[in-house]
Image (cartoon, rainbow, N blue to C red; front, side, top):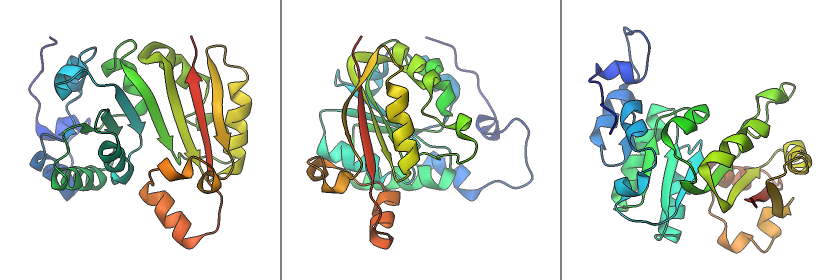
Length: 232
């Protein structure tokens, strides 16, 4: 196992100390069973996350989990799965963990980690699926989008054959661009897509994010959805 270096608490989050910290940063300590922020500890679980969860159930990872509504909903709906949820904001992490504890969930962990660091802590073929819900469409600067070829190069390493990327967006052009991108991917194929998730056959099994719930309550806007399967 990789040796874990002791750090000052602030060193887990910043390169230099600050005069004032987000009060929720300190409160992450309230939920050690649900929140992981030590990158060395995360890295030490590479290739053995099933040991962390205490079972051999399939592992799914969510990029940008917000306040945890989707993660919690998925864990309740699919107790036979393990869910890893990545989020950077302290208050959102704290809220997610608090709600998870209220539901006494045993199959979720929230990680404060950047998405581009996945290869540091996820091993080869270790995950069964990835959820990306309502990412920034980066209008006018699309090269910064998370769903690009480099993401699939990462999935080539960490996702099992037969695993899926699940993508939801309210941005119509992002949806179309991902469909176009998928045509260039040799190891993947689109197995389902719809430009109106809530009027599709998938609606009955759809678990809402907090953004999605707010969007549906305030606007009459379609939600786009894509499933992309790793075929080799």
